[in-house]
Amino acid sequence: MIQTLKLLLPALIPSWNFFDVIADSPRIEYTLLNAPEDGDGAWLEFRPRPERLPVPAMVGRLFWNAQWNETLFIISCAERLMETPTEHSQNEIFRRIAADLTEQPGAAWLRFRIALLSEREGAIEREIAFISAARPVASLSLP
Amino acid sequence: MTLDAAIRLTEVLLALAFLQQSLEHLRRFRGEHILFVLRIVLCGLVIGGVLAPWPLVGLALLSLVMLHRFQGPYNGGSDRMGLLALWCLALAQVMPAGPAREIAFGYLGAQLVLSYFIAGWVKILNPDWRSGRALRQVFAFSTYPVSESLRGWAQRPRVLTAMSWAVMLFEIAFPLTLISQPTLMVGLGLAAAFHLANACLFGLNRFFWTWLAVYPAIVWLQGRVF
Image 1 (cartoon, chains in turn red, purple):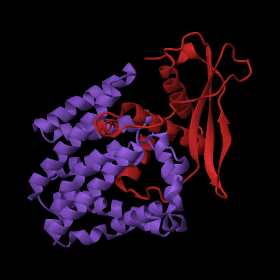
Image 2 (cartoon, helix red, strand yellow; image 1 turned 90 degrees about the vertical axis):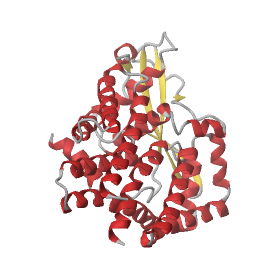
Image 3 (cartoon, chains in turn red, yellow; image 1 turned 135 degrees about the vertical axis):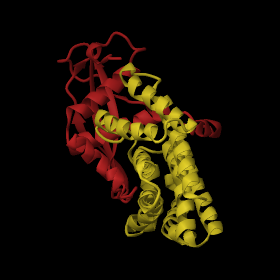
Image 4 (cartoon, chains in turn yellow, green; image 1 turned 30 degrees about the horizontal axis):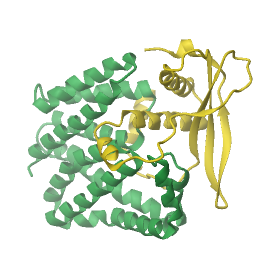
């Protein structure tokens, strides 16, 4: 209960320092494996953005933006994982990637990694900051 | 606007914003459904004005369960404003009529002003924001742009520097709009347009609805103080 109240406190006494600094930006990538000891397969970007988004779709997202808001939550979990690693953050990322994989049956194991994008001397750099252990996809397909 | 009218309008707008968010959560993960179905029911009671103030109190208690479930706000700053509004409203509703009720609701209006002013202040202190570099980074590699084509804006440094200064100056100057109702309406109109742009370019639709829901609090506070 004390922990939950600690989570509430920043909302009741907010800092409002939105975007004061532009931090390194995480990207989630995942790979599917047949066995946990397999070497990494092809890493796929989780929910890549569309090349273009028409204005009507942008306006429509004012009213229904479920997938994007979930993606932002997963990015928050990745940021939390970088700052203070917890099982909760890993579980949420695994679970929500797995939920997107229902149309790709067959692969038994799933790993994800977090790439951090940043700008150094005018160039965008990419660094792998975290690689998860493999987990069985079947155990993640929870309701 | 009277205190009662402002509280009522804020709680209805906030309940509508929560309703929109909660419906999004129903698309999958049955394990989360109970939380959000309960939230939808409570929002319906708030909108209908039934059993007041208990549905608001219920929503405030439910927000603690949700904070525990997601180990923090689901969507960062927008959910934090939603929580602040909810707890201020619940407190104002359970308080007897008088100064305590005004303070609880006035705190929400004051925080709305601070949300713009402080956001502008911390940006203007940062040389990367003053040069336009920070906004260029937002477009170049941050998580937020909703399409790859928007990243092309990072190649327009003059436009982004102008946009950065427009945002910073607007945010810092926002408290000055409190001098009269007409200037406040202009300020809130510009602020709503700013949130709309953020919703379209960066997919931050929750900011748009949540901040709009709190506007009656600042309209009431302006009338009360000035």
